[in-house]
Length: 428
Ligand SMILES: *Cc1c(COP(=O)(O)O)cnc(C)c1O
Image (cartoon, rainbow, N blue to C red):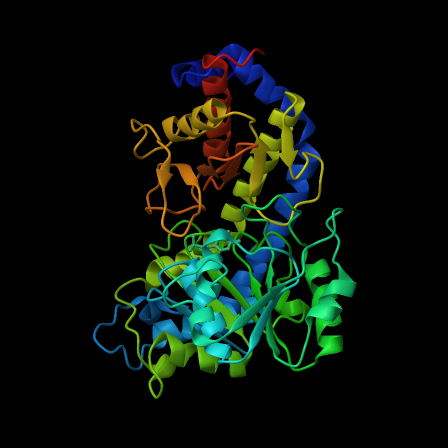
């Protein structure tokens, strides 16, 4: 195959020579970065295999269970595999956990009781958690149950405001929530090492605090997880990194036995706990998706760095910067106009294997404050480990770009996004 063959298949896809050349120029610089990502993926691949071997995963674990789901050995073994990978005493990994927000809500409401206070020492949490906590009034929020909330913002340079965090911790502070990824905020994503420092600090002030880390989008980006840096619970969604693109739904919580026992009775019922919850045929996808997760996460991370490099070279503000160390798979790009935000998302959509003929339109989404435009043409609906882009319609019209089960799909999506910007009048 020649370079011309490659150019001609991209041309068939609607990518101009100019856009492709810009892409290739960006990629040339990235070889050492990609090699470093591959090394982390290789480490994490061995970690996953070792956990599966240690727990003697076999074909019987792929069987479907129905009804109550008593004695679901496949489900229970998968939870031990997760616990080993995340370095925790215990884990819950269930299709009955409907999404990341649900998993986070479970973890918080499992521990917090009326009169307790929750502290976020890293600023405002992810949009959907505002209603869980009751920062925005909402039926069923923690606030409705008499749980209060306090927040210490990060300092302007992104560092922890230790003075304010110390002042915020009081006799009622029971739980601390730390979001690893930046989500929709314009702040740096936290490394496992920095999360570890923060946990050591808050536990130094009040040792019996329960620390939960929102681990969404961070799994397998480094060789350790926040649970190995002192977190009592790490929480995430199976239609992000750890599901490897195959999990059709679900969420996980890994943590101490104390925490997971409480999460289990909150998920099902007091007295029942983890004993119920049929897997309904999801186990093969959960196991195989976890097996693929390290390389899928690496592909998505490469896509993020490629997008950052391409758009930064064109003069756009990107978060994190192209050359920055990264700790999640999200790339934010300030597009500075609603038209460009729409064009970018339409490029991602047009590059998808599924639903490529649809046109994303801005929409009011449950759990989000502003209208949001979302592009996704995924095998699993709403999956954001598959290539997707979204952004709230508010200045600076930041697009949050993530995923890609293969790097080559991510590459096509990013090139197509730029093509749509050019077609909409962006001068190159
Ligand atoms: C995606 C995400 C969530 C919420 O997950 P859903 O599955 O969309 O409910 C929470 N926190 C962060 C940081 C996320 O990226």
